[in-house]
Image 1 (cartoon, rainbow, N blue to C red):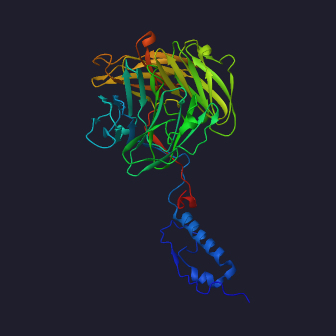
Image 2: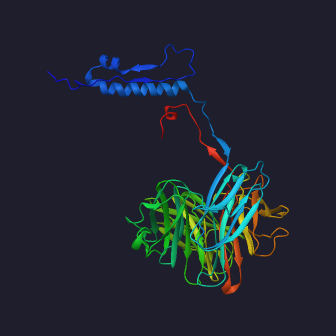
Image 3: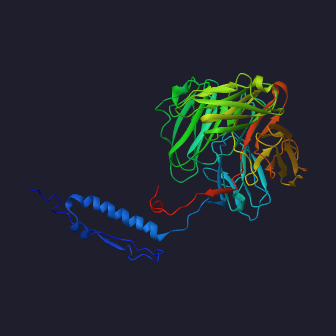
Length: 517
């Protein structure tokens, strides 16, 4: 005789689903109280556990079916952005600038403050406003917080200009949006004197960060760079290749680097500063586009100096990539480099000098596996880096907050002819709109002019770039430059669509409405 395995088991729970469902007319019974004691008495002990699971699932499915939280949505919907947070890495001094979209209905507020707290450096309260201020070298970053209609499409930048000294160079970066997964592409420690990763936590709980990297020799496996703690409202600077948290010795020999920054807890804003060498240029690496099979890398600048395409393959399969350059004279395949074979888990460098012959360009990549792409450019005494970007749209125009010196747009239309409307803005008002036409499959360089009353070449002004209806896809970058010959300094800012709305995902009738993913 089998022993009683459950002699002391007394189950008396009830699952009370107090619902107000939209009952269908043909239903004959309501799903209400489920008495587990009764069910256990009806079932043999052998099937008791299975029965409990089935009853719980049936009750839950009934709740999901009958409560009907809403009708299914086929395409989701768009919601306007009403809050924004960005982080300017600070520390080295330079200029901070903000620019809001003009012609927006409603107000809101925008404030730039030290991340660790303190009085606001600057604020804006009306659409179309811009603001800029120079900062001193210090130990803090700056956080921008915006609410209301002004948060939609808001842009912020940090720019530095050193015309002498060991850090001579012109550098700029878009202030970073906090997130959980970031990629950067550029030189490794073997090609740069300093490679500093700035991690900022804008939230009230600690964040923990894991670093991984790819190089020309393949993935750089290491137990270092894991679990980096970033305390609330602080910025932590990690020196890549110089400390255990910066991946240690394993990255020191990397000439080119694909750096991935992921959080296991919380979120961070991430920025990477490069110092190539004494008086050889400084720059910030732009955040890379997510891995994709089709990419456009805009803004390869014209002029002398080396130009290199950088491609990283983050997956486990080798990638075969078709490369085209989109220049001021049209689109063509670079001779001898039409197809690039890129090994998995590595960074591949492709020289573009012979293909471009000093012309401004964008680069189109079509790959059989997802890749990340960018470029490195040298000229005079400085360096600049670019990355792939999404196309600009009417609802997601391009905005640049800090233009001065010699500023120009490099605008490419890879698929079809396009026209973009360009306006420059400052505290005194806006310039008249100007249309720039881009023939299909070509790149156009358009010089920018400050609005009247800007106050000299060092005065900041904003620019808004809007594709006109009927235009093909448009990709753009801004080139900021100063000086000539060996004293030429420059920086490139890839322009991404302004975030004016977010897409709310589709909904459907399913028990997943009640079960968290």
